[in-house]
Length: 117
Ligand code: 5GP
Ligand code: ZN
Image (cartoon, rainbow, N blue to C red; front, side):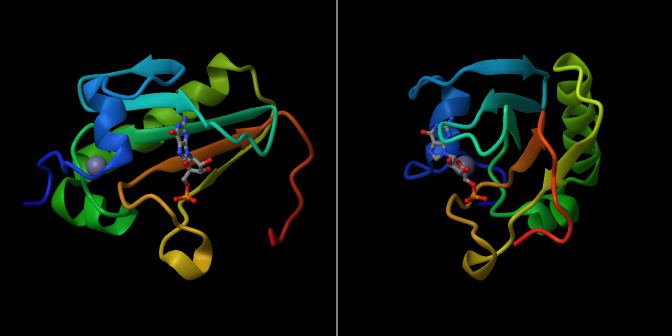
C-alpha cells in the first residue's frame, strides 16, 4: 500500500535504522543523509519517511510531504553553506532512477553544468 514500509526497499530500511547512513537532518516526515557515492562535495538525499515510488507518486499521495522535501532540500543547502545547488529527482530507469523510494538529490559545492548529461 502507498506510504507503508516495503520489506525490500533500501531507503525504508535507512528510515527504520536497519541500514546505517550519515544522517544530516531529520523531521517528522523526512530524513536527509549523505549519498554513499557522492557526485559533488555536497551530495545529500532527502527522502520522505513514508514509501512512495517516485516524486510524482509522493506529490499525488501526500503533497504536504512533497513540500517538506523541498523545504528540507533548501535547509541542507543552507546547512552546508552552498552558494548554489541543484535539486534532482531522477524519475524512471532511463533517467537513472535506481532506488524506487522517492528521493531528492541535493548537489553542490562545485560548478554545476547546464544542461546536465
Ligand atoms: P537514483 O539513482 O535512484 O536517482 O539515486 C539513488 C542514490 O542512492 C544513488 O546516488 C546511490 O549512490 C545512493 N545509494 C544507493 N545505496 C545507498 C546506500 O546504501 N546508502 C546511501 N547513503 N546511499 C545509497
Ligand atoms: Zn521505501
